[in-house]
Length: 207
Image (tube, rainbow, N blue to C red; front, side, top):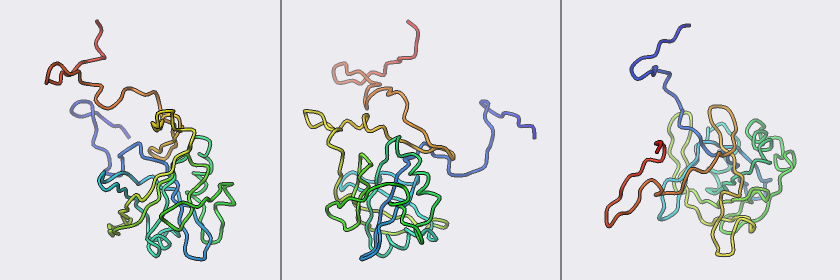
């Protein structure tokens, strides 16, 4: 098939889920008296800052969907590069007849505010309580309150700043896992303050 570029050198491609990259996260959940389960999700993200909230989207046929629907809670765990294989495994294996914690070599640990465990090997763990479930079509959207955030002690500096850049987190894009690239700048770096004005400064021009 021959593809010819249109205006501005672009082509019309199929509409789809192309907002990338996204987090490659592990969701842990557990029914009362049952074994904890793990699920890999890429469709998740922040939705509100005050109160702190996030969302995850799950297919109703996934084993974890029924657990989270019943209990109304989960832990969103952000994995590091060394956990990439376990993250992929938890995305393709089903927890209906498999202990994915044991099979993946990951360790559950108790967290406050919710009854399901977090993943000890993940550098960041967010305990969440569901506030609303929205049925969309192929997926259900779970809106959740972030009740507590746990981070590895080694990621905190002497001043109590969370050094997220040291967590070596991974992300997901178009069927592949990636590590984060070079840091380009911090929020607000594109403007310089002159008096009360914000002045945009180009950094890609040759002097």
